[in-house]
Length: 244
Image (cartoon, rainbow, N blue to C red):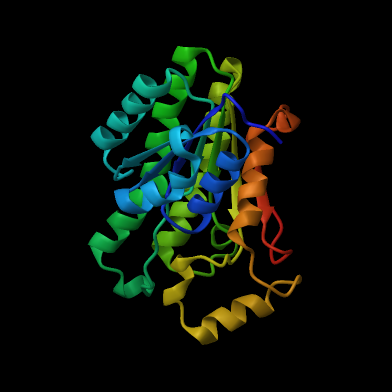
């Protein structure tokens, strides 16, 4: 699957799913914009692709920073074809003990950040006449409720956001879909207690965690012409642990 001459904007690009997405699209010939709050990590993600890569530091929950990032994309490439919103954070908080600032921070990155990048990405796609693809990342936790309240709420919000903007943007030829991963082997999982981790794995019929590269391959499919009639969908990649 080739993405030659396509410009792909990836958030959370410094590690985990985002890094795998950057590497997958880069290997397929895309001009990849790796976006992360950590510029060094974003730069490392695109380093092997040389001139085809652009690394940007951006706090996706900051509207001004997001606008500046997309302005940099327009200045460098003059177009945009794909946005993959994989930036995400979590915090292990019991509902009754959740600090206000943790709620605001998780919602800000996971949901507001996705909204901002979809909005600015769609604006640039419309401006350059691209029939692009916006790909968001939710979580099976949004379906099962098995996780901290702020995380589950933010990821459920992403699924609703996808459905809404897919309808609004369809007339422009911009497709919007969400990948809904199950437990995935990323650094974000490192802070989860082993007992909880083993319990999650036991709940997966395929008997293992997802690998970041498997998410990247689904993102590439959704961005491709092969998925040209797919929009507004939430695609579960969770080994059968829950069904949409």
